[in-house]
Amino acid sequence: MLTTRFTKLVGCTVPIQQAGMGAASPPELAAGVSEAGGFGMLGTARGGLNPSTLAALLDRTRELTSRPFGVNFIIRPGSVAAQSPREFVEQAAKVGRVVEFFYADPSDEFVRIVHDQGALVSWQVGSHEEAVKAADVGCDMIVAQGMEAGGHVRGTIGLLNLLCEVLDAVPGIPVLAGGGIGTGRAMAAALATGADGVRVGTRFVASAEAGVHPTYTDALIAASAEDSVYTRTFHVGWPEAPHRVLRCAIEAAQALQDDPVGTVINIDGTQAGVPRFAATVADRTATGYVGAMALYAGQSVGAVKRVMPARDIVRELVEEAEQLLRRSH
Image (cartoon, rainbow, N blue to C red; front, side):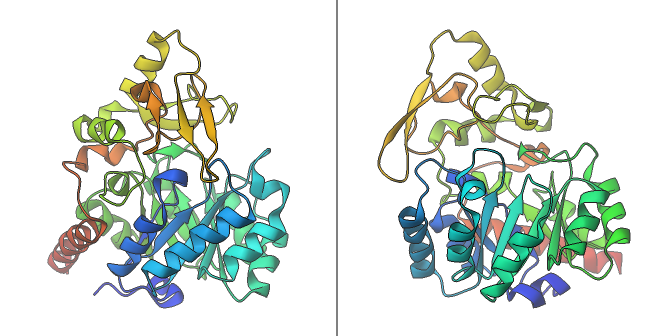
């Protein structure tokens, strides 16, 4: 087994963290990854989030696994978690082993709230400076996100250079590598560089447990790395936030005149229209022109060959990484 500071800290058995991807990472996915020995993350960036619906998500995840898992919050202007942080973060910290934050400067307030409940704090960063600040405010672990990552992207440099900078800057804190990691070979490379684990998103979007629409899954399977585009196209609801999506989604949205392009059902049961160029994830409830919605994908998308259970994705990554690391020694 690949034991690292990360696995010892959070209590998983393999150094793989599933990315918290909003509606794409429901309780079934988080639990599936944790049951496979990795560290599953429950995504909270979704419409209809309130204390009752968050409690339901946490309860459902705990029903499905007794193993440690984490909870991801995106902190940006207008987000529910940013408006009422204590209520939501305390709730998550009482159940999750780790509470993770993204897309805001590291905050000692959030760290205190989580630590007061006995949980750990993770911050996903996109720069050396952000990593130093995360360490200074007391974060227990850091995710270094290279710009190869799918979804919203914080930084502007590639993973390898960022990872080296972050590892040098915060040697006393476990660091995970995220962005473009979809194979055991990439996982082995990150671990060999000094990462304490890897963060995997796109591969898990195409898992059997992910909460995305079949049209989205099919597009991932058909895509290669060149089809993953860094852009600001899907800006409605999250203006001026760079992200990485499939080229076909950009082309489909630009070709349409319809607005909204479809609907999704929020977790509170309400229906929401999806404006053209919205940041909304094309989840299982999506209707309309699903192919013109935000089909987020990192540069690892070429490794998506078919839909697989989360446990098989974890096993494939670990077996290949272990084989390569043994060979290198």
